[in-house]
Length: 217
Image 1 (tube, rainbow, N blue to C red):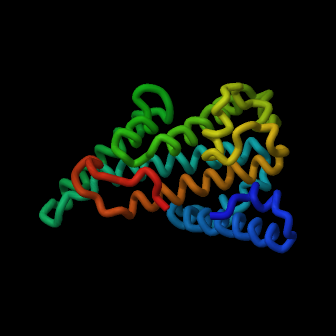
Image 2: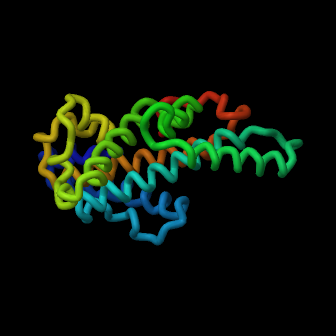
């Protein structure tokens, strides 16, 4: 996958434009696939980076939580074998639904920690969702933050920007705010793409006891 930073720093204008176009096209394609998976109208996610920072974060975290629920349910109901009755499958799905409804996104225990323990998230995925959730909380718990930029609400921890962008940005000073939203949207598209692939990987056993590569490409 092309890195937008490489495109921005290229010496050849045609190569720069080509890399930037590939970067944005890949991102848009992955978001379009996610829109179908999440059963939301086309355009809901595809141009998130053009929306306000507040809307960007709220939509991302809502989609991430929906995807986490799917990952947990998939892990609990896949790999059961052909002889398992539909009644048992429905019971497991109901248990997964009850479990996810009873868990918060963060904390101990949480949907993030459960999905990670089931091998449905790796460390980078969990850090991304956790970083977005921290910004969401700052929007949700103070009405005065509604018009704030992500950069205004971000915590000062050294690794926060790395976690929020899957390592594309190490310091917020590296990029302007509008470009930052593109990187965050790209990280979100990456999360959805990886999660979708994990759901389609053949499971090896009950409750997610399977081996999934750390980096799904």
